[in-house]
Image (cartoon, rainbow, N blue to C red):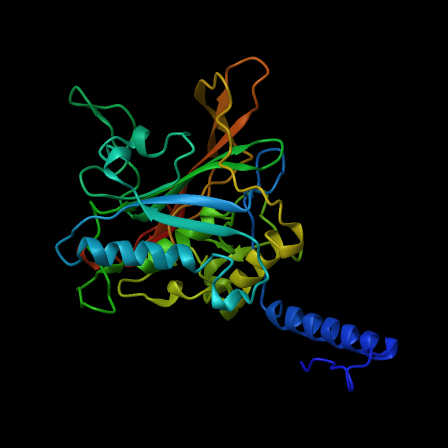
Length: 361
């Protein structure tokens, strides 16, 4: 687009200014139309029908990278940072359409976190964390017994969101990577038989982190069917068009997959629509912890959950509800899951899980 310049220092004619504005608007509409030529995106909703979203301009995320057999701590830090950056307003592919700023940092020693205790990782503590679980996968050992059930071993990664039920405001989000049942690395650097790429899975999980659901479902159809942003009902993933299969939010992944690292037009459209620059709340503070919040688990069949860079079908979701009188009602989305497809070492394909998230194929 060319800028309308002044002639010999004189004022810009009104018609020239109008023409420039009309041209800018036309270019914007064309760009928007091109970005929205794909199938559509799906948002998580609370049991009351409120779509999930952060109500602040800047969200802080703490990473807990570590050394693995096939990956150094520094490589994992880089993978975490790149996955976060893919959805940030400064990402080149977004073209400045979004206000959402995602600030990633490595947690310092004073912010120690016991990654062996699920409750410590997924607590509604306004600490948004990314953790590789290498000791236990969703189980909290207590005196030799499991205080909580284990996560599905087919889940590559899982995101837990705490929201306000009435508004859908996300208050806390935590991402866990399954380092117990899967072998991880940076697959652009090292070849791992049946291995999974950390950045690939985390980029998918970050979509859940900002409130996105899967664009299709695995296994049995949920009731009711979630709708995408165009109002169309989601379809079974095996019948999904190429644009849905290309989305970072597609719910399953094969070993060696790197395709989820790069956002699709649908993924870009979601960020640009939900966190559009013109709606910037200019609130750079962290959300306040509701006073006197004592949370308990309760069934909420109307809410969906998801996990991982590509997830499985979503049954019901659990929610945390505040017991304090007058305190806001909270919803807990457990297991926004990415599932692994065709785990050959187990000798059978992965079927639907009871948690939403990324599955390996």
